[in-house]
Amino acid sequence: MAPKFQIKVFQLSRFIRNFTIISVVTLSFLLVFFSKTDYYLISGIKNLSSSVVIPITRFISAPVNVFSNFIDEYNQFRSLKFENKILQEEIIRLKKWQTLAIQNSRENKVLKKLLNATDNNLTLVKTASLINRNDTIYSKLINLNAGYEDNIKTNMSAINERGLVGKVIDTTSNNSRVILLTDPNLSISVKSISDGIFSLLTGNGDGKYLVSSFVKENKMPRLGDIVVTSGTAQIFPVDLLVGKVAKVEKNRFFVLPFVDFKNIDYVQIVTSK
Amino acid sequence: MEFSKFFNSSIKLNIILIISFSISVNSFILMPTINNSFYILFHLTFIYLIFYYYHYYLYLVALVYGILLDILLLNNIGAHIITFLSLLMIFVLLRKYLIRLSSFQIIFFYFITLIFLLLFEQILANLIHSYKFNISSIFNFILISLIIFIPTIFLFTKLDK
Image (cartoon, rainbow over all chains, first blue to last red):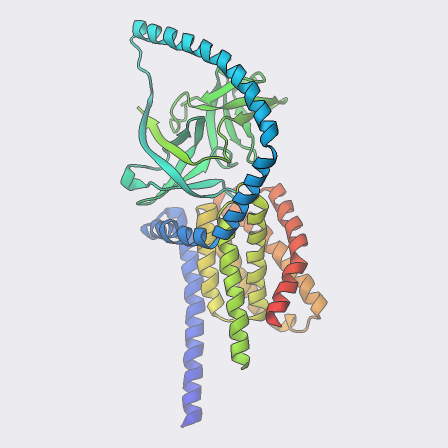
């Protein structure tokens, strides 16, 4: 009786094993297929990963975060004296600019009144804070604490006080994911302010510069030119600040973004009016 | 007794797997090397589990971590899940040959598997989701792998006693 029972148990465990392996393999290939066609299941998995997995991983990695912050504070403390000197010089420089800016602002107001012009071409959808970031390995993504319940939709633009941060690529009920400008897989159509040269910019892979992947009529902008979104692709609103031309080569140029991607705490999700 | 020993080491390795996964998916912008190192440690732990503690539950582990890594790092399911499952299947096919290898050969094979895995993920991400193949990131991974490989082996051997 006992050997018979053992054989039955062995056969059952073998059946469970084979069934598990076959179902896992089938399920994974189905998921790969569905991820391309964007079914409800994939959206559910993404929702689950944003709302459940990310908080857990944040909790587990909290000690490393504390350590990282400690190192950062130590480094900041070390460079305090040097930064203080730079800041003092900057204050003097900014005071001069402030006087000029106040004059220009007054002049602007008067001119706008004369032209009957509207101020802004943007509609603010939501101001969201960053909950975590995955911008070291593979893509340069950040996760925000607002989703489609806050009217955030894919392809909306994310900006902060310095300029364009990126584009919303995925939304769940309470979270959304933004691809940063520095990601090599994101292209933005831009124009230079001084010459109006149209081009396409992508991330350079180093996470610091943007590099031109296409320049209309091969006209290169000048060093130091300010680059803004052109609005031609109708994804990003027109005239959002992108960066400054930092390096010009024969067939391409590099742009240093205005946004400090290392220090993003809040972003605003906007659309064109 | 033997079962409890197996169970203990397996649990310890799974805890390492969870910790390394958590750290690798939360970017520490000031120290990106931490993310890369733990990403590689995750792969090393997973390969070690397959080599020394093969069990069919690893298919479920591969499925869960594959999906999560794909969603959190690539926003698309594909590269990691296919790589992990392929590794498991290849291991089942090659198991009878791997048993015959000497310890040095196993370590060499272990390292080659790691590099191949990282490379394969990049290639799949490029093929399936059109992610740009990043040579500098591959070199970075290889460099970190070279640095952390021996200490990791040492740690795992200590865990195994």
